[in-house]
Image (cartoon, rainbow, N blue to C red; front, side):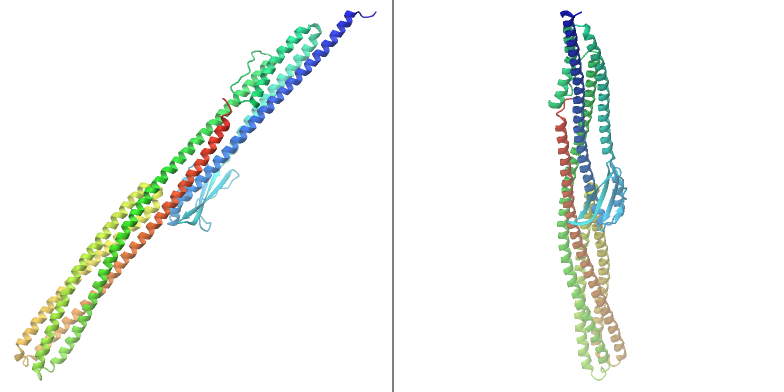
Length: 563
């Protein structure tokens, strides 16, 4: 029996429905698969880009941090290394270990030998080196090991989060895709008993939420990166679960971007704090430099005063030498007088004349000794001036030590120099006291010499008055002459001692002058050290600015996402 047209139409409609249902099922399955692949690829690409930018920013921040720490350690170690202060170097090296993420710190001399700290090698430790400079010369180096394990932890955490999100999304998408495929197959079988309109409505119902998800994914990949957009699907079927999974993925991605932005903000704040600290330290160095210049000026004035004192002492030494020569001539004359006394019995008149000559020479000696006493008194004034200069130098050293204490660690080297200046001033004051004591002794001997000379003149006058009795008292006269000879020897010895004391005073003043010159030179070295410290702080400030610019660049990249 031939089939009727209706049956043929039914078969044709059935075949058409089968082809249509199969085609729609094939299209729907491919659409879901491509959508899942597209969403997964876009999400993975976005996460990889974000992780790459975050890792590069973290590495730049770590490098800037390591260079800043090594530069800072090199700067603070310059003074103690120059002064061979091993205790301070050990303190600085140990202090660096309390800085976050610093594994070790080592200070080397100019030959590369370690002076403080020890190297702790490791795969997660990155070394940063910086030279130690003093007066423009390299006197050593430092090495700071930064533990960068936290960078690897951040990388692994980011990758793990990404893999977890992708895996979760892929798993849920696969489950959803499988479920949708089953439903589509069931619908394709049920199409045989349905109507074409129902199939069209069903296809529209399935295709509408898929288009929404596709639009959202396209906006993430090509639009402004708005992570606040959510897929508005309220159904509980497979398409609804797929949309819910997509919303959960975007929520987690939004939190990840927020965390990255918060870390960038904290690093930017730390960079600004480091820059402000560098500017503040640079201002302190400027004030220290001004104080050093003022001390140098006062030290130069002190040196000029010491030079003037030196000239006065040298003049006194020359006078003392003249007195010693005169005393030696007096001793020689006394010896001749004793020889001439033997001829008194024969030539009495010659004896009287000779005695008168001796009296005149004795008066001259007394005048010279009086002049010596006056010179000794003038030396007392010079000693007072030296004492005043030493006191002023001591006061300046005390002020310099106070300023160094205010400067803290930056003024430690300057405090050492100020202490040396104070000790030198104390030694100068002590030397001045010893010179004053010698001058008092010299003055006492000068008065004794004057008194002896006066007595000698009286004795000579008595000899002149008793010239007539000289023959009967010749022996007494010779004894008196021996006494005169002893007094003259004593005067000669005192004069020689005075000359030696004057020479010692001149040497002491020369030592004070040399010490003052050394002070000026050391203060000049401190001035160079403050300039070098200023340049170091400028370098730290520059590195902080570079770090801050890197943080700003990362903020600009992250600002394209709306969370």
